[in-house]
Image (cartoon, rainbow, N blue to C red; front, side, top):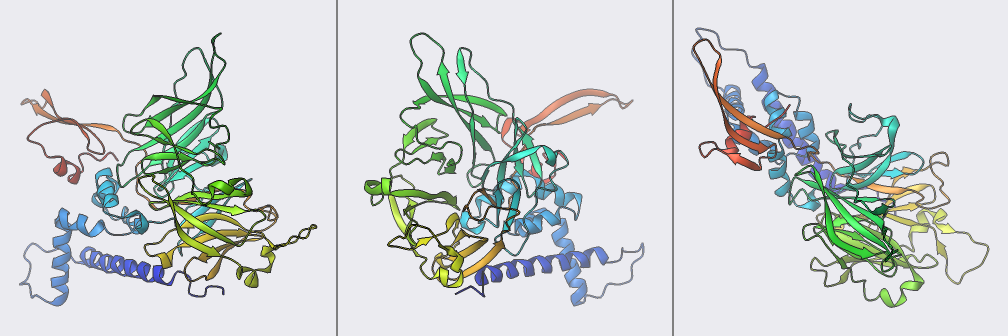
Length: 490
């Protein structure tokens, strides 16, 4: 049946978050409306309202309490609270605050709240009751008319292509950083690069951009085409080249352009016969085992879906012609194999959406179901996990446990070719306060002469804006520095 209580549990959680936010805003409004104390104030009579104002004043003056209140609030609320005051803007924008908040939040607590569908244009599909940011109003630093497209999404950050330049963009905060081009080795012919975003905010506030390039060594002894890997580090704002290369002949069927997915510290690429992953820290490439039940019959199946949700890597293979039944496999973190997480049966979906039955000229023994899996979203509980399906003319949500359905978006012929299922790329939108640019900041102390001219300047500390120390005075505390806003660059 079509779901009439879509997202009931998630709505309850959102209402609780909104209630907490409302209580705090009311307390803040009481503080701002309280009249200023006169020079000779009358005797104070303690009332419930004055007691409440006193508590608000205590919170406002105690930075630790204020941070403790702000940390658990949803990203949506924190984005609005930046306009309350310069102090709040400094706290919420500080990478140290963002990093602490993220490491305390499990990945399933911040699932995708929307999808960007990209074909000839870009469409939004909202997965929550809140609207996703549109690409019609990008950061003031970006010209939306020059946006070629989205290359990849990863835990709240997007990799965009503007002409020939790549940019890491946070659609929540509208912050962006353009990347320098990777270095080119002499004596080597390079072909079209494929870029992948590597970012795990629960591990580090820094991101990496992995570039896979096919190259040809120009010497008389070899004409072999190989793949080489470059990686850009936001921590150092520079590229490095991996010593590890691999043969194009060995992994000729892997789609490096579309299948790159970052999980467990590695970029994963899938193919029909070989699959591999690149561990960014260890700078090495290894093969990915295929699900055992699928591998012997892989030639009769097609790779229907490969993607990430939260901290879970999924793969789905479906027999041709499209069957309504399939298993969703999940990879074990130690790469020892895949296991069946969900068994899906879609036979009853055409009762609500008869357009899902595809008409063909050649009769088949089985009905040919017209659908495409465009996303798997995991909730904190299995009851909250669902598939996002594209059927002719619609994007629908299918809850895996309750088998309930909900229409998320109607697609028109003007915007998408509904006869060609999933004729577009899909990118997840996840709310995030992650920074895209990390600057080096120096804290200076100086002495002045009697005529106010500078006598001496002492460097007290040199650190990155995320407070990774390069040089630090023993008498200065990093935690105090970021709280006082010294490390914040407006």
